[in-house]
Each structure stands twice: as C-alpha cells, then as structure tokens.
Image (cartoon, rainbow, N blue to C red):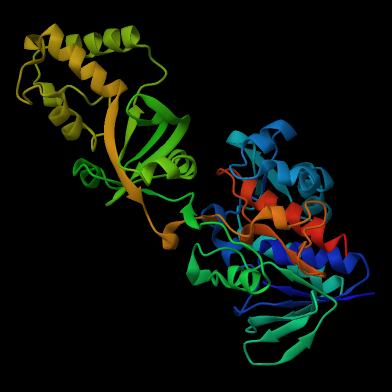
Length: 408
C-alpha cells in the first residue's frame, strides 16, 4: 500500500483519487481552493458536458494534439466506461445533439457531488485551502510535496492534476508546468484554446448577443480552408464565440500567429444558391411594394437585417421591385459568404482549456508516470493534450486519471 499525494482537486484529480483508493492506497488530495471541482462547476455553461457518446474512431478524431499518446488511456477507460462509472455512482445522464453527454439534471454540481461522495466512501483524505508549493525529489525519485504553508508531506507517489492556465479564477494558475520544469520536464509552448475570436469589423459589435443556429462556418487563409463545420455561434462586443468558433480556435492558431484570417459564414447552408435565389424572389414578390430594408423579416433575425442591408450595397429605401438581378446576385453571395476578419484569440480568462503542456514523449502513455522521475505522474490538462468541444477534454481528464491512479 502506497501513500499517494494528488496535487489538484479538479476533474482529473478527483477521478485519480478514486482510482488509486480503489487499488487500496492511502490517498491525499491537496486543493488550493475552498472546494473541489471549481472549474468543473462552470464547464458546459454550468451543465457539465462530462463526455461524448461517439464511437472510438470519432473520439480520437476530436483530439487535436498527440492523439496517439491517448491510445492506451482511452482503451483502458473509454467514454462508455465514463458513462457506466457515473451511472453506477447514481448519476442519471442524457445524450444530446452531437452525442454530448450531460447529467440529466443539467447541474454540474451533481457530477461534483457524485465524485465527492465516492471519494469519501473510499476514505480519500481531502485537504482544502492547501496548495502545493513544490515537489520533493531525491535521486530521481519523488519523495513528497511542500505545501504553500511550508508543511513537508511525505509520499511514495505524487500525481500532478493542477490543470492549465485557462480560467485562472478557478485556481488554474500554471503550477503544474512549474513543477514539471523543476523535475526536468519540457513544457511545450502554451496558448489559450477553445477560446473566442477577435474580429476587425465594427458590425460584429452591432450584432452583440445575436446567436446563429444551424450555420456553416469556415476559416480561410487566402483560398486555403483551415477549418469548416456546421453548428452554432454567437456575436459579442469583441467578435465571435460559440461551439463552432471555439473548435475553430484550436485548429487555426498556428496560421493566425502569422496574420489575420477570414471567417466565412453561410447563413443559409440548407439552401443551394438556386434555392436561396428562388426563396428571395418569392419574398420580394410578396413585398413588391415595400422598401428593401423592410422586406427581409422572413430571412434574418431583426438584429441582422440592418447589417445585411448595409453589406449588400443596395439602397435601404429602394423598392423591392426595382432591385436588379446583379444586385440580387451580390446579395445572395453575401448571405452564403458573410466574411469577417479574425485578428486574434481572446486570452486565458475566456479560454476553456490550455493548448500545450508537459511534453508527452517524457511520459509513459500506459501509466502517465514520468520517464524522468520515479513515482511522479502527470494527468489531464497539464499534459500537452487538447481536443475540440463536446466532452472530449473531460474524457482526456478521466482516462489519464484512471491510467495513473489504477497503475500505482
């Protein structure tokens, strides 16, 4: 029986503590906040998208960085295992659009409650308001931790589950990267990921608060498509956000560092150019005595109408029956290709996760143990692993946690 110390009481730390305690170890979790699962509480807008019910191939496809590293962890504790674990613990779950799995209650607090109860049941010792200051390493072996209160805590194994640096208000302040470097590990370049985007055009500000559902969005560098998908997005005072945009942010970072990119939105993806033209002609026929600006109520939400009128180049007061074919064709093109200029990413305060982290070549993929320091493990977001939205990042946390906790 080992004495296992876990730095961090978030999703990965809680799951690792359960896994290690089930294996019969004495487990201590050190959490700098006043409660466990602070970041978990706000995930999925407070509903907690705890995994994705897709098949294994899709699971891997949604991982952006180092997916091969996760082969052993994902097969050792899959998304189906995650659902089974929570259901066995008494949490009812439901599957929504895009195979996203949520607690049936829509409350993230129920996920935290289930994990906390399981930890208590298994005798896990939880130390709140007690952060880890540094690791104690002697002759290539971890010997314990030093707390922020300067208490020396001996340990046979130490698991680092401190998260990244996104949402620093939840306690994710990059401690794990500092511990990793001090232990001789390499940390790859860090950047905010699953993060909203800044837009150059002023009309984005005009559209603040407008949500667009069922649109197709693509990000382009010149004619090269870097990302394309279908779904939901929203305008904000600085630019754009929402599931479509957050996923794009993780895949366009390299190119965005070199300069601005183009976001092209198809506002009516269900209609072909010809079908949309027929629809507009029909609307125009019904509104033939109206001014152009007053004829678009059936086509767009009211907030979008003045912007689309301005972008069309057609005089707002022009009678609908006077609009030329050329003008209509240009307007059609704008609806299918509403273009905005992406100038950059928002910062860590708005990022769901951190891209980059402890280089996985230095970690055993089957156990998450450091290849450099015996008895030291890294799990979850602190590793150079990230995925798209939809429950995939939490699955990385659960799978790596079980790999570490269950292999001690």
